[in-house]
Image (cartoon, rainbow, N blue to C red):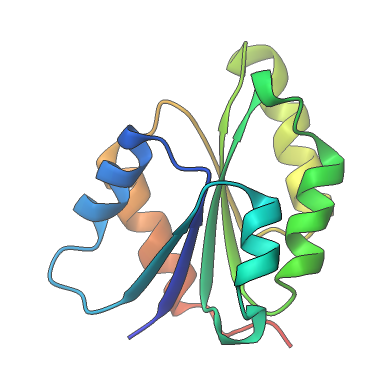
Length: 128
């Protein structure tokens, strides 16, 4: 059983995650924003954090750095809704790699991709 925190998820992302976790007994928490998650979560007890970043929200490297800093031992999956994924996607993924965030998915996300990513993330050892 894993402790999972989902941040800033829209209805579609919640549905994808629910489809990706059928029959698995996990403790899943939801938080509307990263700031709320920082205030309410015990980061050391989390196994996986899934956070959605939206280009319209002016979220950028600062928020990604805060995400990694707030959850230093959790495995991270970042999903990104970008204005132009073909243009912005490569840069966003490079920043994610530089911050040692394990997984990055660009929207739209297929159910199979989410399932594979969550399973892979949960199979990784926790960060030291």
